[in-house]
Length: 94
Image (cartoon, helix red, strand yellow):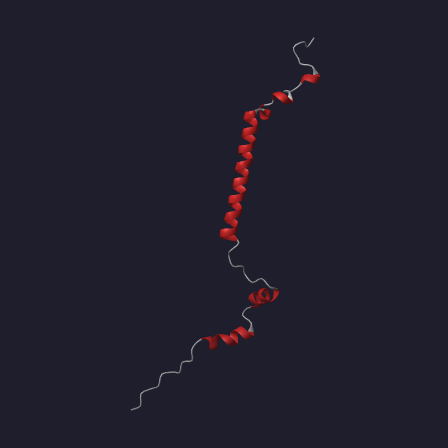
């Protein structure tokens, strides 16, 4: 009845005749793996050169709390001391 249909045991290509098992397929696989390794290496280098060196924000709980509620009293008291002391200009005497 279905004489042109292959038998169940003969489905698909034979493993030995697969293109990936040929010399060209193995070479393609090596080149593909080499390219992936190269990209991972370059991404790691970019990370360590540009991203890891960036300064990190102070996210300690005390600092976050101070940022949410506003400047702490100690910092507000220190702020005028950071500026040089200036005396008001004298008025000329007649």
